[in-house]
Length: 249
Image 1 (tube, rainbow, N blue to C red):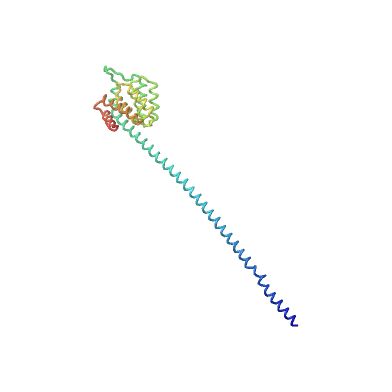
Image 2: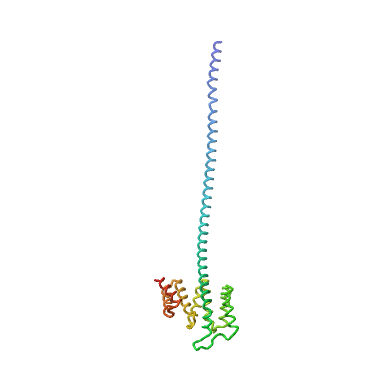
């Protein structure tokens, strides 16, 4: 009986010792689960960070594009502003010339009608007189400068030998000048210069000097201004030429 008791005690001790061994793996399973959860959270954070970084890059790229667009628009506004100032200045020049010509119109008509021998040289053709007057009125009264260009070109085609030819060329030179069509303006002012008895010749020479100056031809401009001073001394036009000569020095 003592032998059986000792066996039972020994068996009980063995079972008690074996129980912790069997239960021991449980904490390992919990650790693995916790570690797996931490990895998932870290991956989510990394993905969120990457998405945010990409969004910031996209926003920066859009801001850079907007900045370039604003810069281009600013440049366009500045160019348009400059062009507008130039156009307004040309318009003011035209108005000043128109005012000057309208003030001197009686003398102009008198010169057109009288030659060196004292005989009348005004146009005998009523249609010719009417066509010229209509073209002038498009400028002085109606302010239709585009229409005036068409009218004066038509007049010169119909009456190339007209006593008003020099004045028609001068008007066209002025009109093209205000439109910044320098080649056309140069051609018509040169035509005026070819009329040596025209009272518009001095102004035409002065305008040709201005055109040469704007074309970065200072020597040519200087020569034209000097020609005005030499051929038309003590006149308003020569005074303007003298001022232009001083500005070239």
